[in-house]
Image 1 (cartoon, rainbow, N blue to C red):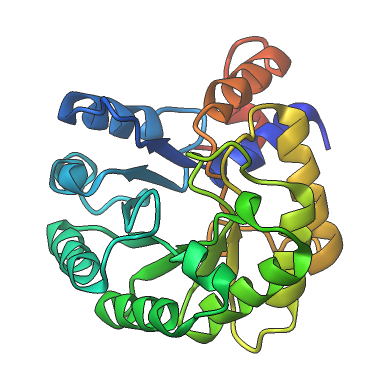
Image 2: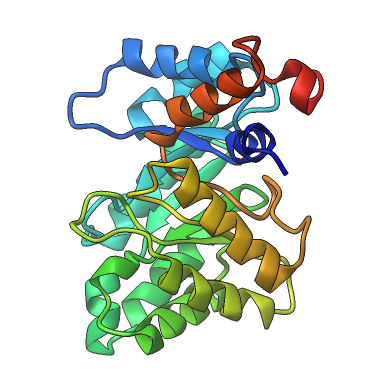
Length: 256
């Protein structure tokens, strides 16, 4: 597969994100426009809850999903405000909720509150997608990543996600390998979202190759695999344009 084809595939799996401290509504609307732009639309946008309503007006009922974050980024908010924030975001039009697992508590071995948070947020989500952020870069070993993955899935997660992108260590192939191993043994469809620190085409290739090897070619679709890597967006566009003479990937990867 050519680099342009791989880039187009990765672009279709991208959650285009703006969770900067200085984010604005104007920036959120610009993100929506970028998400819709050729050569192919991204899978979703991910932004702060306060911008969900504006994004819904901009995107309408089109194919691009609107994701937002709760208990973000530290994972230490009490359950009641997290549930209220989830309910408000869904009422404003969010399609997907990215919930930070109370990971620091989980690492101490006290999992009751974390289980309650995940299961109650999923209860609010209903048929909307729940992605649970594990923050794997802060875990001491693979066994802890495995246990957190199992906990999140058992409590209702539809996706498990590596990182917030707000810590020093974010996504890694080693963590994703452990998470895919758990997903492969789960008796219902679960997706994965490598997020944070993924900046190059080589990075994207590596994660896609790992998913293909462990889960089978064709498994990684927007329903099962996302990249949380906004820094990757322009790299993918440049790769597509470079191999198609600056015309974009419309000819290389099919119609918009």
